[in-house]
Length: 177
Image (cartoon, rainbow, N blue to C red; front, side, top):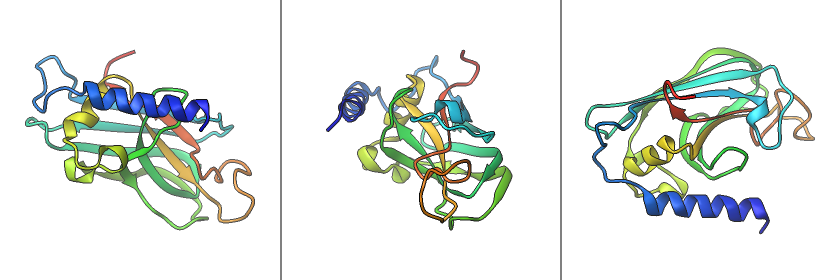
């Protein structure tokens, strides 16, 4: 295992051990946003593609609505929430879009919207309460990325062909930073 894998594993374990109670505190964030671009991907991606994901928690804290909007991106195959801090790649914990067939061409606008509940959590969060994901989101421990693939080997040949992710953005409480 390399250093980044150890760091991602440590962050995952820390987030799981320090997750708060199922009921949100009054001061806790209920709206989140992620601004996506290629500079936040690891490794960095030279692309003109961008995106934004917005999240809104329902009043009882059991459902997280989202909308994913992209611009200037080609060949989207999937989009996920991952568990990791900025600069580290982490495991998928929720699906947002896809899978789509490679080589589908240019996309602009809303490509996904829906609701995430505890039943939708995957990877290291499978079987856990939604509050665990929310705590990670509140502490900059999650990101959204959009994966692309033109369907032609080799991979990572340029914009529209980054299967590991073309644009990425850390999820943060709306209005922060």
